[in-house]
Amino acid sequence: MNNDFKNGFIANIPIGLSVFAYGSVLGMLCTQKGISLTELVLMNFFIFAGSAQFVMVEMWSSSLDIIGIVLAALMINLRYFLVGASLNPLFVNSSKKDKFKYMHFVADENWAITMNKLKSQELTPLFLFGGGISILLTWSLGTISGYTLGEFISDPSKYGLDFAFVAIFTALAFNMYKGKEDLLPWFITALVAIVCEHYIPGKFYIIFGAITGSLSAVYLSKESNDART
Image (cartoon, rainbow, N blue to C red; front, side):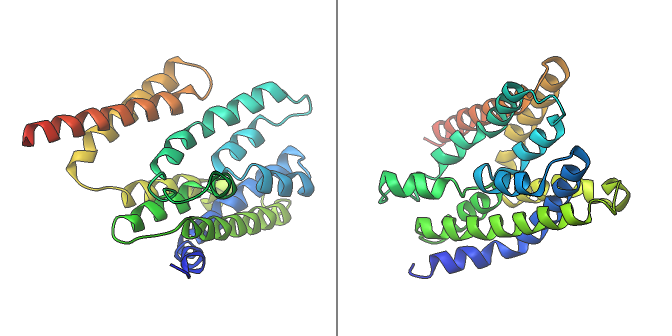
């Protein structure tokens, strides 16, 4: 456990390559939106949420809708309430100060890797923290590289770079797959998200899909346990 920070850092390097790739796409978008490199770097360190940063950059304009951008980012990041709750076993012996300190460095990638490792071994929050630093560094390097090259690549989709964001989350989802009992909650999540995205404006479909899928997973798990007893 003394090497948890190092192990967490190293464990996230492979997925960090994909993080670098879609981070570079964000950097390119920033050049097109007129966002300065300083603003991008500050965004990386103080927000550190790839999906929220993409939404913020997409909404960026000469007449900033600050309230709209903040609300969109908050809606995107509401899933971290569920992420934080799922990490309770990791922080069972930690102080509130440690929780606040480490949770800022939780991204979807190091969270997924940490949860997967927790299935087979004991870990300390340092593993999560090491993974977060690894992802933060690769994300920052990717965004800065994309920003630097942005003036030379006007259309990221021409090189397939726009698909990197989708690919990484698809890989994370399948990495969390535990068996056929996951299929129905996943289907319900996707169906609710698609319907809400079609009928409800904004990014609420992410929240409704996640909450419905989570509740269905809990209900189906309870039903399965009751059936066994």
